[in-house]
Image (cartoon, rainbow, N blue to C red; front, side, top):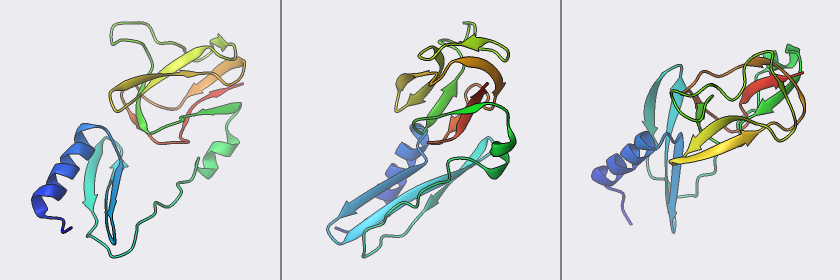
Length: 148
């Protein structure tokens, strides 16, 4: 199978339209990976040429070294997606800084592939920092907030 430019462009559109950061496809001895790097708000797709060997994604670091000096336990994103602090644009946020939460309380939503995934607190405590803005893309393992 030979990858043509139109096929690669369609894959790039799927990548952009679905808030994905990477798509990898393999067909026998050929493989293609499309990846976009998110820098602030702007994102630019990066297209990799077809390769003869399968492509494996490198593991991404869970958090930056500076995150270790923060107070509290980090609550991280279980998936790649878009962070939402409230159930709808006109609703109050699930949590605010200073608010006390219990283990199992819904603290935010991460949208992945048009599915709204409620994220629950893994522990009880007080929200000391919310690290992500509403509508911001998040990566797997990225710290969403700190709970003390």
